[in-house]
Length: 152
Length: 179
Image (cartoon, rainbow over all chains, first blue to last red; front, side):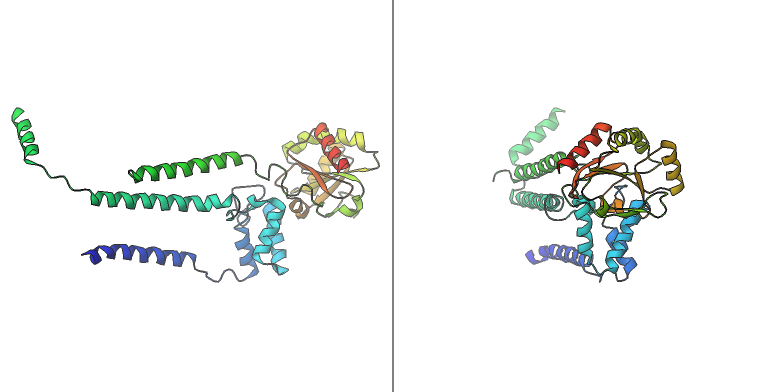
């Protein structure tokens, strides 16, 4: 019986791990210069339209950034080097995706921590509910209910 | 632990509170609005064509040894128009200072419109064109107007986003001369 109860949890774990694997696996990344420019640009904030990425913005600044990315890609710089160059000029806030260092850890870490605490709380509560005996009406309780009904 | 759910709730609540406090302390302190990484660094190089100067160019190395004010602007930006009187008054005050240079770098504009505006306003300091936006990018500009002060040693000593007054420009020049 215990083994049967465990199966849904095992199935759930398999689904979650499988989904995480599919979502995070490396698909080889962009291969052409255009793809790399688009890929890097999608992670950088347009300088004068802060809610858009460099990849999709049509402002002069975004065009200048795209041209600079292209120059750097053609010069053989890695994606990391190119992003660091822009962070060096504009600061960390130029990255649309916060890094895991500095205050960036809060953005990534707090939701995970909140999820773990929430899941922990749920597990503890469910276990407590299972431990607590179910209430069974005693003869005195039934007599009390019968008395109340008769009074109506 | 008598009431685990209560402790979990307190824990999650505390995390949310910490997150909110940290975020509130960060508001308005984005480096984009408070100077950014360029301050105290060597001024990025530029080599740009000067407006209507028969191919003459302005090069950062030609300004070495001078206190330089660099103003990024264009003719369609309202704050740029609003600061024009201050720039003209400041230039009139310092045009003959041997240790001083001022360059207006035009970003994101049409040359004919720039020419028309410069003539109309009678701007006499160097106006350079940055058609591909490379200089604007190198200085980490996020729009216009943006004004930078560069010391005689070639270090960026000051930066102001938004329009400048004569007093702002004097403060920027002071930082360049002190740097």
